[in-house]
Image (cartoon, rainbow, N blue to C red; front, side):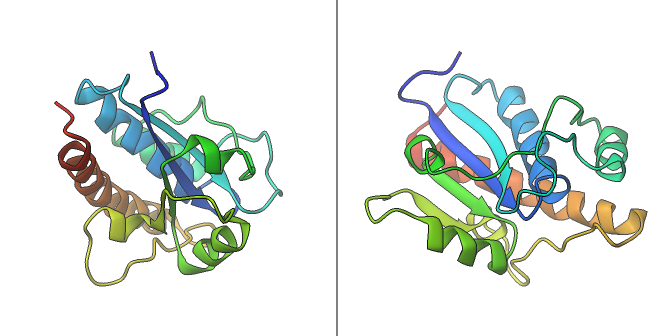
Length: 164
């Protein structure tokens, strides 16, 4: 159950079929495991509209399922103006999508608009590479990065918002 005081986290990539649904599924799993489903809402979206209504890429689903994350229920959608009202954290997978989000950001938005890896406390490269044109190892690399950043983000939210 989510309430008006729940913290909204939106993960964003280009088409919402590879990176952002991976982050969505992994982070949602972490939130559920921590018993914080009522405190943290999780969603994902894309800045592009090419895949609207489609499930995550089959390679994304296969790699995620091998690690225990079921993404089958997710469907691609595009970032909407309402997202800036509903999400305190809007986290992009790469700089190009962050720039797109900065152009869409209303002047009144005071939430956190940043790169997911930076918000998750990662150092070094702060972009999650797009695996779409790559092989299975590219999807595994995305999962490796996302799992580390998801743990860091959850720890940061727990500390910042004094969550159990």
